[in-house]
Amino acid sequence: MTPLGGSRFRVVVDGAALELEVEALGGGAYRLLQAASTTLARVTAAGVRRFVRIGALDFVLERAAAGATRARAQATGGLESPMPGLVTRVMVQVGESVKRGQPLVAVEAMKMEHVLRAPRDGKVRTLRAASGEMVSPGVALVELEE
Image (cartoon, rainbow, N blue to C red; front, side, top):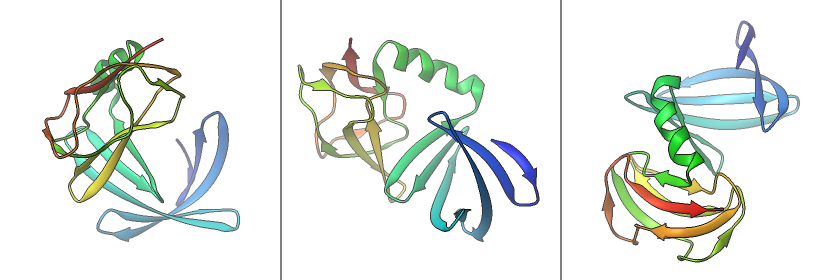
């Protein structure tokens, strides 16, 4: 993200650069204006992590130092619970082939649903999540193999 002055920013998402105007609405809510479209976003802080909901999409952002562990886990195919919560849905089974971005597991935390998505194409090697189960942060819920 690059500040452009005032409330305008340039962000890069999946290789595409966008210019946004950001309007703070209070309580962690923001209005994102881009060209002729408006989108609402909600940000919840938890330590070094920021849980961001934009429309129906959920993202977990971390500072670089904390993110190094997650990057290693994703490189080896592990997907962790972002925070303490309740598994509300398990959308895959062991042995199932998945595509990058496919929803795998949903965890409800802080009155928000966080969907863990496949970081790459692969096959579900292990699944350590069941609907209705409480999970702790940093616990690997799904592991993928190439």
